[in-house]
Length: 337
Image (cartoon, rainbow, N blue to C red; front, side, top):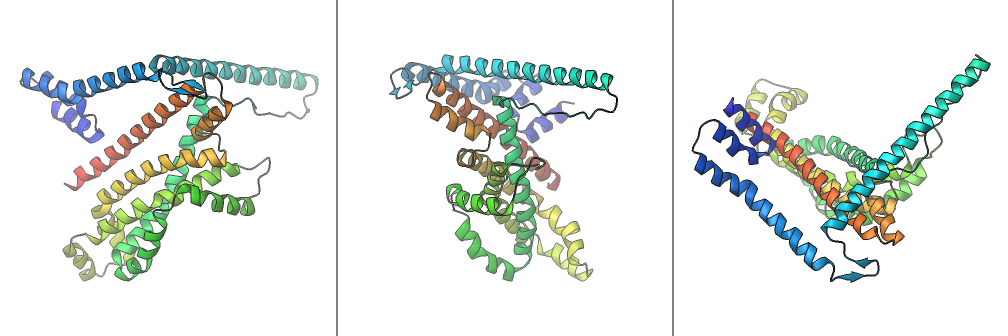
């Protein structure tokens, strides 16, 4: 049981709990406590020192929006954002309750009356904006993966294709999202016409495509490297058995290259999350990027605190996404071993 828990924590990247499991399993408590202090105590002390330094120095930095808020002010703003969300959810529930009551009364008077279900049009809360950002980044990430993995496999399998695409990869890989965004905005505006029945807003599509264009390169490059580094004996076996390309890819190439592919996907998701915030600011997609921009433009007394909340939210979500991809990467690496 202990070995299974240790393996689970190692795969998921939650190695902080491994010493506790080993202590419970009867291993040397003193040695494991030292290890626990290294993996949990040292980071905790460092973070506490950071908070103390931030608290002491924040009030001394004056801006046009006032002094930089300290940890207490930022934490207080977290409570305010939660209260706003709860209040808005209550209004939303009351809106649908009133609408349902009106429709029942309307049907009671006329069973053949036409009933309309109108969506709630209240302003999105902070948590709604987090969900919008997550949907956007995952849309861009999925599109990037669907493009990068097949193209990376082709580049890894064929030196000719790799030579043909390599200059394009090297040219477009370093391009900033701020350069892509105007082009994407113009193309989306020309090609996509919205209506009341449209599934997606233009701002969402613009942000997602910008994320795609900036995040596909790590997956493409790592996939190509993984495929090209497959043991040649496996490739030769496929040739001897006269396997067609689809069978080679399914049975030989993908299983061998999966650790490289997931490494690229992990890097791509991190790049996509960073790119998203800038894309949302300029495309006005109602996510965390737009929240930061709106608070900056608002210039109220609590704007800096709210921006700091967004900064920590972006960092924590980015860390969580990286842990998820790291766990998948470890899982496939362990399977390979």
